[in-house]
Image 1 (cartoon, rainbow, N blue to C red):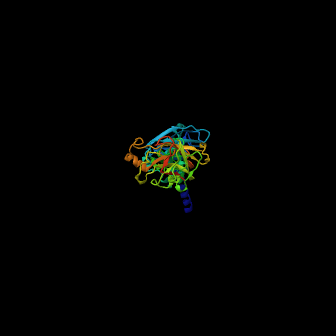
Image 2 (image 1 turned 135 degrees about the vertical axis):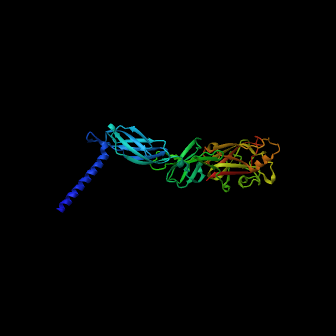
Image 3 (image 1 turned 90 degrees about the vertical axis):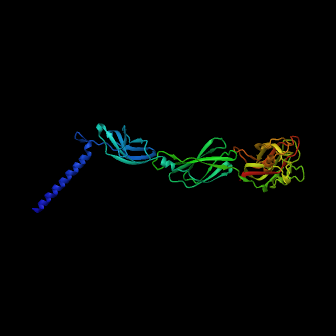
Length: 414
């Protein structure tokens, strides 16, 4: 008898537990019951939160429930909400909802789907992150460890390792061929790169750069650091003069007027030794130099003789006023000008502006000692071994005369 009582007690407890459990389940799904039938509305499936700048985009899937008509999104403990309509197709549909004007930080979202008659789905939750001024103010451009000029008017860059949220770094500069602003992207995993065809203005190139960031893998907005600017002076290296020699061309006036005024005095490294003097010739008068190797020329300097504080050669006698510089890599012995390319036209100006014969000012003397520097046009090819000077006139006049040169110095990339 005691055994039967125990069995009855167990059955009573089991039935009671089942009734209570079913009542709780009924309470949960009571909202889906209409006219005695259970009506289910599909919930937001595979929901994702995509971070942005003071905004977050929510996306989810609508699978196969044709009863779905609308949605409602709550966020931040239901302090705000938005809603919208949907139209289900026969395919798997993707719903995208942009939540704007969010404070920077983490946000909690609840999404409900609704059908006809106000029936709704169970809740779907997702957490997202919006970014704003705090994040943007923390962004710094990727560090350029080293930047230097390279052949072909290019600039070689060496960068530090990029941070995990960096996508690329953008470099802006003037293109020497088009003269227009161009942008080159350097990816975050690239540490050494080259900016091609950089235009230098007065031997300087200004490079602006900034780094682009994605704060996380879900981000829909990119963020930018402030621009930084670096200035690179283009001088190149002084070309070694030990390989220089005169290039004797048939129609040049390259021979020396005086026996002690030989061409090698143009590259003996001194402006106080005797100057080189060509033979007297009709203007224009020309002479050519073999640099000993092909180089990418950037600039050159013309110095007059200034030995023993003797400045009588400055802006006088055979010092050129107007002249041209030509380059070639395959000259012919007859001096055919069709084998040469003009690299530039130049003028030696007296700083004081006074005519020949007037006493030199201190400014004239200082510039004469310093020499006159000239640059080669960055928009052209300046890779040459042979350089030819065509002197149009000298300070003595345009009648037959000789040309005086104290020292010639070239700068170039190897």
